[in-house]
Image (tube, rainbow, N blue to C red; front, top):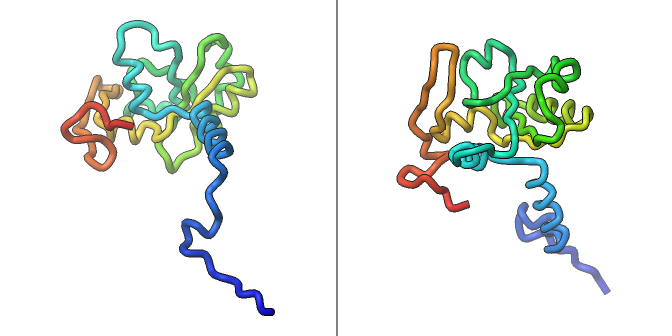
Amino acid sequence: MTTQLTAPANPVLRVAPAAPADAAAYFRASLVFHADVSDVASAFAVEGDPGFVVLDSRSTASWDQGHVPGAVHLPTALIAEQAEQLLDKAVPVVTYCWGPGCNGATRAALALAELGFQVKEMLGGFEYWVREGFAFETWEGGEKRAADPLTAPVDSEDCGC
C-alpha cells in the first residue's frame, strides 16, 4: 500500500487556521495591547476625559514636525527617568511613534509597562493619524490634511470596522 501525500491547496492554508476558541483568545489579546488611530480620535472627539493619555515617544524634532493634539511628549530614552513625574499610573497610556515601519511605540510601551503603567500601542502611529485626515499640531500651529482614500473612507466618518 502506498501513501500519497498531497500538497496544500494554497499558501494561505499551508498552515491550517487556529481553532475558533484559540483564534478568539489571540484576537482578544491583540485588542488588549493595541488601539488604532480611528478609535483614539473617536475617543478624543467626545467631550470630557477619554480615560487615557496619548504619549508621543519620538524626538523633539519629530514632535515639532507634527504630533497628535493633546499628546504628552516623552522620548523613549527619557521614559525611565521622567515617566513617573509626567504620568499617572492610574491612567492608561497609549503610545505612538512614526508609523507601522517603526517599533518605537513598542519600545516605549515596554518601558512604561516595566515601570508599572497600563499601556497600549496605537497602531499606525503618527503616519496613519495624518493619513486618516485627523488634525495635528506642529511647532507652527494646527494642521489637517485630506484623508488618504487607501486608509479612510472618502464619503463617511465611519469605516464600519
